[in-house]
Every structure is written in C-alpha cells, then in structure tokens.
Length: 443
Image 1 (cartoon, one colour):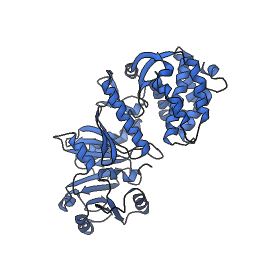
Image 2 (cartoon, rainbow, N blue to C red):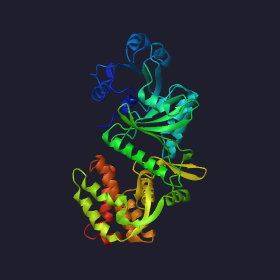
Image 3 (cartoon, rainbow, N blue to C red):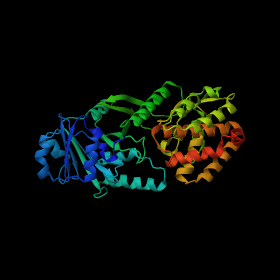
Image 4 (tube, rainbow, N blue to C red):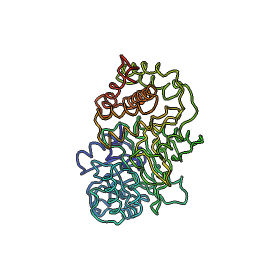
C-alpha cells in the first residue's frame, strides 16, 4: 500500500516513532492512525494542528519530535529553542489534503529551487510553475494554503545520510508525494538543495512493495549504464540502499531546460546512440522475459500470451540491434542542454531491448496525453508509423511487443483492466493484432 500523499513528511522522521494527534480534521487523523505508528513505546512525535505557540510550547519541549501544521506563531527558531536541533518548514501545494509538493521555506533561494521536482509538460503548467517560483523567491505572502514544520531532537537518518554524500554543503530537502492518485507506483521523492539554491541531487524513496521494485530497478539500470560506453547523458547513481528501513536511491541532476514535446533530430540522435550490435530478436532480454511476465499477471490474462505466441514466430528469424530502452521516453522525462538531449527517470529501463520502442512510446504518449487522441487517432498513428518504417512486418511486431510490454507492466503493478491506460493499450492491441490472423494484420 502506498503512503498517502498527505503523510509524505513521514519520510523526514525516524522510523518507529509513536505519534499522537489532536484537533486535526477527521480525514487526517484517520490516515495517520492507519499509516503511522501510534503504539510504539520508543520516541514520541507530537502532531499539532492549528495550535498557537502559547499552547504548543510545553508539549514541544517534552516531545522527541514535533509536526506542526498551520500552527500560528510556531516557528523553526522557537522549536530549536525548545531543544529540537533539526527544524524544517514547508509550504504544501496545492493543499495538505491533496499534497503534491512540500516546498522548503528556509530561504528564498531554497524555496524557488524546491520547484525543480516538478517538470510540467504543458505550456500553461510551465507558466504556473514560473509564477509560483517567483512568488516563493520574493517571499510574497499568501501564495500557499497549508504549511508544516517538522522538528526533531537530532538530524533524522534520511537527511543525515544524504548530507554525508555532500560534505561541505548545508543541504535542505524539498519533497514530492509522487504521481497523484490512483497511481499504484507512486513513491515519495526529494530534491537535495544547498544554501545557494543549487540542486545537488534527486532522491527516490520506496514506500511500498511496488515502488521498491521500481526504485531498485532504476538503480540497477543507472549502475549498468555507468559501466557501458554510452554516448548519452544520464543521471549518475550516487547512492542506493537501505536508510532506516527504507530503500533509497540518490542520483545526480541533469542540467538544462525541459525538452520540446516534438520529436526532433536531437531526440533521434539520442535514441540512435543507444543501439548496439545485432542479435536474434527472440534472444533480447526484453522479448525473452515478456512471455513469463505475461503469464505471471494476476488475475490471469491468457489472451495476452496468445498474442505473444502468434507474433513471435513471424519475426523469430530476424536480427535487430540490441537497444538500451529508456522505458518512459516522454517529453516530461527529458532535458536539453547545449543542444544535446538528456533523459532521467529510467525506472522502466532495459539494457537489452528492442529498437524503436522509445520513439514509438514518445510519439504515442505525446498524442494521448498532450493532443488527447482517441483510439481511432492512436490506431491511425500506429498504422502510419508501421508503414513508414520500411519493414512493416517487423515494425508491426515491435508495436505488438511494445503494447504487450506496457500491459505486462501496468497489470503486473496491480492496475485493473478498467484503468484508463490499460483500456487504451488493450484496445490498440486488439485492433493491430487480431489473434486469428496476426500476420495479415501486422502488414
């Protein structure tokens, strides 16, 4: 089960604390009771909601940690004076109940840099982000609704570990709750910011079984990329491992600005650099592991296995370049710096995959998410792309494997057959590869 977005701040406190809470809204007390420890007999964290400092001071002095939400006149300096050597203040956007971002308010530069966690895909969202950054940097009052202060007797394990990776820097963390509901793969993340407002790193924190598998896989991919002579820019893995019972991966930021939503020559050069030596298509890890992944889906989807079994014989004699696949090559995961493309979020990466999968994913995602294609438009795009590639049978097979791979991922993570993207991929697969005559359909 994923951690509720409103409790993302729990990542900043040590595991095993006992929480008490009073005067909070019922929805908040309910999720705190469900996801935080209320029975531990070790250290105690006092969660205060709306308490003025005059009422909160004595409790703050006794507690091992304090979580102050919208508490008048409760400040980091007062909590430090009460014996808490660690105190951090955040604005919660758009609200605590629907939390997406926890913007660190320690300094104007840090507050502005906290927005680095968010890479919008639409122009209107870019404008909103720019305005919010400006208001944060100018310290204009009233630009956020809820604030939360986290205080502790000593620096919590997560920040202590990350701080040790950057000796000589005073760091602050800004938090993101991850993808909005109903995303099953949601995980908290953080940006590591120094006192001048420079982003030093990004952190991903596994908060569920699914998210741990994803974070661990990305760490493996980044480590694998570092060992290869790949002529593209990717994040460097700075740390991966357990921190206070949580699996954490820390990676370097990428310079530059968000990339365009159009497929440019820079995009194609990036993807071309990921292609390696040719090998038999069935021997690619992406293909060889796909059938077992489809068989492992619960509840079973034997129909997807049937499609795979129909398509593979058509191209099993083909040789194709073994290709490093990003796995979510989309505008919101790319940056441009000095005319060169760079990619982050390698959570679904594959070091031995099919060529053209990332290009296909990019164009399809841009159409579905940004241009709001319906199924007819998406099907027309896939048919046109297949016909333009010069080898329609191979291109059509790559499309089928791509759709099967996406379905195996989504259904494997626990999404239902009724989920929007599952429905879209299902319908596209049915239109492109009817099981009774797959070869005819692929050409």
